[in-house]
Amino acid sequence: MRDIRIDTLRGLACIFLVGYHVIGNNPSNGLHIESGYLREINDLLETVRMPLFTFLSGMVYAYRPLSGNWPKFLKGKARRLLIPMLVVGTLFAIIQALVPGTNNKIDNWWLLHIYPVQHFWFVEALFWVFILIIPLELNRLLNNKLITSLIIAAFLALAVGQPYTKLLAFKGFIYLTPFFLFGVSMVRFKISPLPILPSVIGFIGIMASIYFLTDGVYGRSLLGCVIGIFSCYFLLGWKLEINWLARIGIYSYSIYIFHVFFIAASRIVINKLFTVPDEVNFVIGLLFGVIGPICVYFFAKHMPFGRLLLLGERERKKTIKQEGA
Image (tube, rainbow, N blue to C red):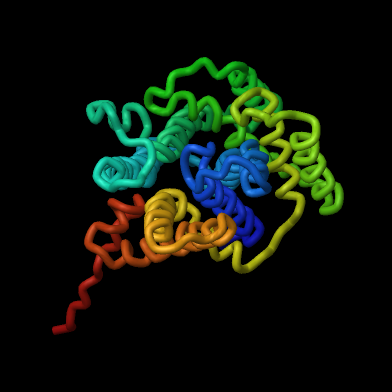
């Protein structure tokens, strides 16, 4: 049974992520916005977006954890994460190379996926997180609060300076692991979030502190990671149950994989046909980036091998009814 609160937060994470790529991580891409409230909000959420996605992944995993058959577990994660990364990620790189108006073309094709392709770093890094989970679970280390806390602390300490290679998304693996383990801990150790009011005050307080007291916090720094953990904890305490966000959250994986295709397409078309305010362009890009991947999800379900290649899901076996003699 699905948890509407988790799905709601997944939907919120999707909005944050799609909005980020519509605006662009800096003024040289996306909508080329240099200043203004859209740029400020986008930059402010740097410490929230990927931590929230990963934290919720840890919570979902904790409801159905590894139970002993680790080869089957690993095979399932490889199918779910690596196949769409290889298929869709390669398609994305090819489109970027062929279509004018796209960003960040690939220079060294022989290093494709060895160095992650754009946002596909997340699924590659998450796969390494699951590989780490296997020995931790088999040795029951994550059943101990103290040991789990020490592992989280160790990965947070590794965030200092982040002097790690992007090779095979290793840098992303270091970054994501504490959020995933924190999500696991919330479920496994039955850690209760704060009541709604303190949670709202806590999250707004953190965001206000970043905005008014700093020039921005780098998300992968130690401070950024600590803020990310507290942000996830506070957002969970909001106890949000918003149906339309939860419906979006159900398709969060498809949205993550495919949103950039639709954002780029909408931006290119709009720029060629119209001149509209940044706010209108943002809303259009956001709608395309959310609705488009949901349509792909339903299309893939009815396409031969679509579930496997595009979504990493097992193909459903067709049952043949046999007539009795």
